[in-house]
Image (cartoon, rainbow over the protein chains, first blue to last red):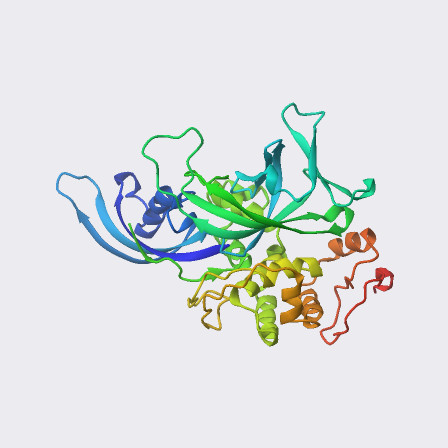
Length: 213
Length: 194
């Protein structure tokens, strides 16, 4: 799930940070720039792991702040192909489910990717939500309700990075696409575990770090 | 910005959790004071609910040593460490049926990749149970036992698991000794724990 990446960046240290020791100031500035952002072909930046080299410190003419060339390692979230990740159900409507990882909120599973056969019925409490049911067997006692108590494990199939569009599309743009190939739900409360095979589906990561389909 | 090494080493969930803890992340009210950003806290909150929160470095080293006999790929070992599967159904989709895409892992602080060996870009087909049976056969049970032995559950989880479903294959005993290598059959009941 997590990788380390070595990145080199030229950054301008704003004068407001001059009171801090250099390392702390640079780390703060790096966090401001990189944290919680998606870098294309790399993934979501979680945290600055360590700073390896600081060079430069030159001041451009007319500028009030110094510029450093910093080499540092960063913890990146990028699931690899075949990884199993567990997420919680966030929302479910007739188009499908939406999962959350806490730091990622927009993992959508379209309706046709749910284990077959499935059906849904409208939720009495929330207007636009539905409750999905997987009819494992045709008997009534083998119906599994996909409700908010269960953790859903899914498997990553591939990772793509679509190019940034020039105009703003209607949905939030996703610079990273994660395709899922397996969907297994863990009914831990009832002590039953089952899994199914699903054809690939797409998950898209938006610029603010959210995943959507 | 220049990306010098896109993959300087994979990290297990435990390592990331450890790193965040070392920075000062915790569950209690000292949250606001610690130098940990709120987005990092979200990752911390997520990881604390995974098996990684109960693991220790020694357990992971031990697991790495002992799983060499099963000839698992690096990605599979990483998956197992992160998920700590306790049931057969978790191992199977989990470990054996995926395409592996990350290659070399060499950095020092990286526990899971300490042996430094290279993983070729093997692509294993998305098959079904047949594949794991082909590759491991009976060893799947041993592997499961190894996982249970090396990553034991804390007592609170044990009692709730024992109560739930008597047909499970768990022993669930936290005090399990390492030389217990018997394969458990499906109908073992946990009533005799010490």
